[in-house]
Amino acid sequence: MSGPLLSLRHLYHEFFARAGDGFHLAAHSHHPWPDVSRAAHIAYWDDSARLVDIKWAHFYAEVLPQAQALVAHLVRAPDPKQVCFAPNTHELVVRLLSALDWRRPQRVLCSAHEFHSFARQLRRLEETGQVRVTRVAAEPYADFAERFKAAATATAPDLVFVSQVLFDSGFVVTGLEEIAAQLPGECLFVVDGYHAFCALPVDWSKLAGRAFYLAGGYKYAQAGEGACFLIAPPQLALRPLITGWFANFAELDGPQTAAVTYAADGQRYAGATFDASGIYRLLAVWRQFEELGIAPEHIHAHVAALQARFLAAAADWSWVKGGVWHPPHGIERGNFLTLAHPQAPALQARLAAAGVTVDRRGERLRFGFGVYQDQPFIDAVIARLAQL
Image (cartoon, rainbow, N blue to C red; front, side):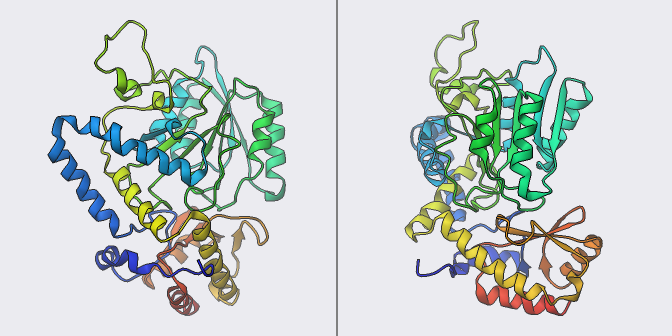
């Protein structure tokens, strides 16, 4: 790489030929797929037709180890066999929840900004009286980690769940290792890395023995749906109550004894039959990026340069007045910008009418950036938005 700005829009030529030529600024919501993903999708169909009944044997012997090695490499996890795939992270969360001791109410600590599927599930469990939840607000951002650690000490939680990058602001949660050090050994510690995976450089090596890591290919990994994963700490051999036949695939032909057995590695958290095409796409996309010498740190540097250019121009836009950028300047953020504005719904409609795609969470507009954008693209977006 000669500099932070990349020029990779040509890798998405076929995708945008079908999606249209609008200004897409929602990579954090639905990231465009590189064109190589189409051939990978077809390869999954071809393998299914060629192998039929022995497709899963091929998947476990050939495809899964490659995908596990890729994920481990991307986040510097020490043991690829601790990577377990599933169609979505919610399925994995449910299995982790099922491993808690439900003979008594469970205490959960999380941020007040977890993604909808986890937040909804938690609220539903609260309705039963079986869960007591402490939620820590992100703001003020500067001391979030300290406040979160204090809450961990005060509440003695059974489960701690926190996003590495908060979905409603882009705020990067730091101090995860220090948070882990505060927790008793029996407490489950889960980090939702969805908005960090393939967006930021992630080094999971120091937490791999203590915490679970959740992420997937739908967003910045650019592989679409169906390629989510969990990285499990090897010494924490839980026995999820909710379990499927893939949780011990190697012993499928053995006797089904009274005691339910689990795989010795991360596969103990697996479910059942699923569409594996997303994993094929994930492998194809990142093989291409690796051939081009592109890693998450290059993507983040590219995005940071585009964000800086965008924010410098946005300071002069009248429609931004009255809004607040989250997190504020000087605090680390992920690969999208968040504008909290009281007129957010109307502004989103005006942006859409101008051909600019962003998404919204309540009063917060999110502007996403990725390697499918280059400097001329952002300059054209800036010119369009200056006229809004």
